[in-house]
Image (cartoon, rainbow, N blue to C red; front, side, top):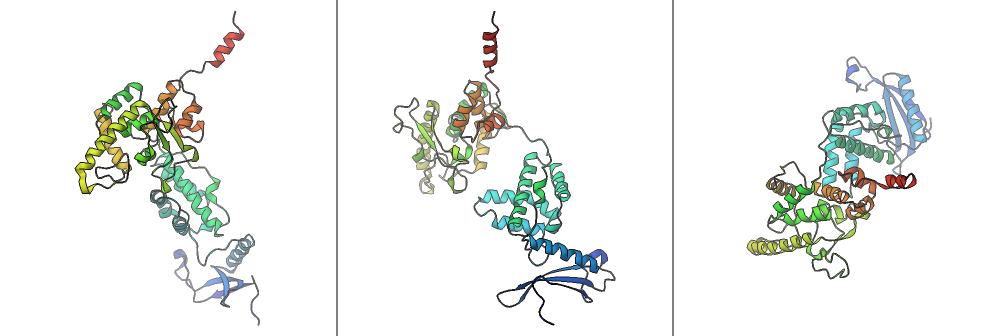
Length: 392
C-alpha cells in the first residue's frame, strides 16, 4: 500500500486510547481517531491534523469540519487551541508597541474572561459564552470596564483570526451590556475655580493646577512639560496678544507622543499662568539647592522633590490636598481641571469649534459630549430670525 495522499483521511479505532472527557472516562475502552494528511514537511515527515470521538460518525463529522476549515485557510495548531491561549498570545505579541500600563490594563480586564472561559476551545466559543461573561462583569463593574473588556477580547480573537486559528470572531457579533453607573465627571463653577486658584498659591503643584485649569491641558501633557518647551518671555510670538506660549508636542504616553495628531498645538498662555510658572521656577531653583547631590536634573517643570518625573498618583494625592484647602472636598480628580476649562469657556460664549481647537480634540463632538458641562450661552439665532420675519 502506497503513502496516503494529500488531505486523505484515516479513521481507526484506538483500543488503548484514553477518554479525555471525565464524564465518560469510567469504562472507556478506547476512542475513535481520525487524521487528515497535509503532505510532508521539509524534514520529510508527514504533517497531520488529528481528531477523536466516542463514535465513528462523530469523527467523520469532525473531519468534515476540519476539511471545511482547511478550504478557507484555517490552520489550527496541534491540539486544542483555547481562548486562554489566544489571550496569552495577544498579550505577548499584539501589544508590542503599547506602554506597560496599557498591557497591564488589558491583562487585568481579561483575567475574569480567562478564568471563566480560558479552557474553552476557540473554535467552540459562542456568542452566548461571551455574552454571559460580559453580563457577569457588568453586574459589578462600570460600563467603561465592560467596554474595555469587550474591546480587548475582540482584539485577542482577531489576533488568532489573523493567524488562521479560528474562522470568525464571535465577540464582534454582539454589543457589550451596560455596566454599573460610574462617578460622573464634574466641572468647577467660576467661584469654585477662583477658590481653587487661591488655595493653589504656594503649593508645590500650584503652577500645575493653574496651567491645567487656565490652558485646558491634559494631565499627561503637563507632566511631560520641560522648561525648554515653555516660553515665558514671549520671544517666539512677539506680535501675539499673549506673548508667552507653550508648544504642546509631548506627553508621558509611550514614545512621548500626544494622544492624537490634533493634540499637537501651540497655546498662548494667560498672564496668570505665566506668573504662576515664573513663581514655580523660583521655588524649584531653591528646592534644587536644598536637594544638592540628590537632585536629578530632567529639565521638568513639574517634578518630585528630587527632580524625578511625577507619577499620576503623586499628582492625585497633592491635588486632593489643594481641593480640601479650597473647601471643595477631596472628591475631585486632576483631569476635571480640563473639564472645567471646557465648561468655563463654553459658559463665556466661546464657540465649541474653537474650544475643541484649544483642547486638542479630534472633533467638536468630543468637546460637547464628553467634556462640556455648561450648555451656555443660549442659542438665539432661531429666535432672532423669526422675530425679524414676523415682526409687526
